[in-house]
Length: 83
Image 1: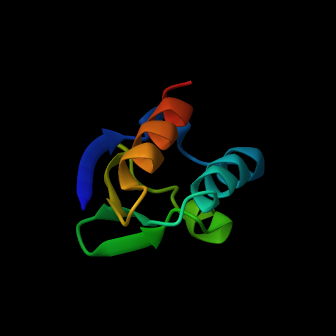
Image 2: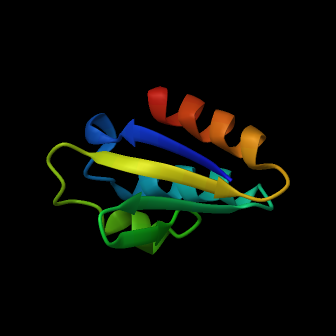
């Protein structure tokens, strides 16, 4: 399991295109991918879940990957978010 704290502030609020791109990219991987904050856990492969992220001013989340291709998934998603 890999847990990576990251700020999505520049990405929030997600629009349809951004949420779709992140969800489609995450869906290419077999591992479980979630965005977590406090008591909230969102499936990073769910466009609807990503669209619900709008009220977090600082954008701080933890990207959690769990499964056989977790490192590749984390690297790819962080690269996507950075651009």
